[in-house]
Amino acid sequence: MDFGYWGSICLAVFITLWLTDRRRFLNGYFLIAGLICFVVAVWQWLEITQAPWMQALLLVVSLALTGIIPVALALFALACVLYSHRLIRHAGSNPGYVLLEMVGFIIWGMLLLTLLNSLLFHSQFIWLILGLLFIWIGYFMVGFLSYGVASLLDELPILYSVDFIVILGAGLLADGTVSKILQRRLDKGIAIYQQQLKRGAHPQFIVSGGQGADEIMPESQAMRNYLEKKGITSTQIIQESTSTSTYENLRFSEVIMTKIKIFHRAVFVTNSFHVFRAGVIAKKLNTTMSGVSASTSMNYLPFAAFREYLALFMMFKWINAIILGGITVVYLIYGLFIY
Image (cartoon, rainbow, N blue to C red; front, side):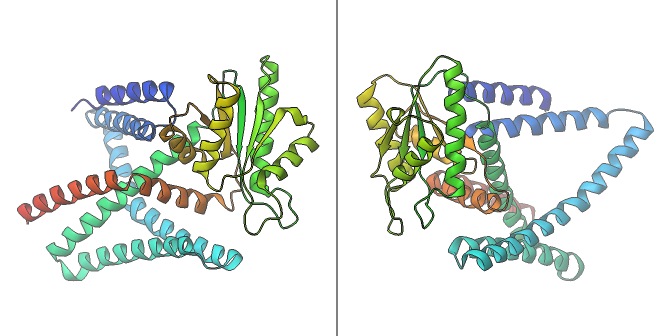
């Protein structure tokens, strides 16, 4: 197989898809597939090299990868357990934190069973089950990488003029001021606004967020207060104060913008871990809004990214179920035939 050719095809598809709509989940998959194909193509080219030093280098790399992969999985599992304990200690028990801990223990169990089966049991049935579990983990990891790549691509700047900058709401502090996460969204929105002014555009802010049960004012009001303190005039700020979810943030904001200007261009701002899923929702709502990432604290980012990917996985649960089901059936038929 000519992996260089297929890598070029995957990258060409990725560029086409991303330039037409950066909110596609497939963007990350095609980019990763293209890069993997190129790595394999380079590896194949090196394998046919007759130089002894090159053959020795490939052998060393192969042995290193054989040892690195299980060690990396074990360290990842340890990180899941320790990080979940840290979250529970600081923020209290949460189903998501427990799930993250369970992922770590499951991976440890699989690695331990692999070792025991290699040394003691030598059971073909156990190899069959372990192979299936590792394939499932690989599927989740590729999907997570695709989500991560797609989210990173939203870090790229907006190079066109916009009419509106939508700031998606987040929780407030007890005194009604914006939280750190929400402050970063607002600061990013201000940075975009200043860039737009240099382009000759004068976009309006849509601050979107209702009032939670534990909040003393609507999130949109707190966001307005913050923007005005930063020098944004009140005439440039529009409040949307009824939404209670990302879906409603985007839907209600789109209604407001359409009433003001039927044919408009807009971007929404949210944190890096959330921007891609929000973009998928915006696409489902048939809006043209693209997302822009605001930075996220590294202390919170790993769990936030894990939680967001699970939410994305559930958004496409039937597609994922069909793919995993198909992979499982093919694997079991092949495995039972071999064994």
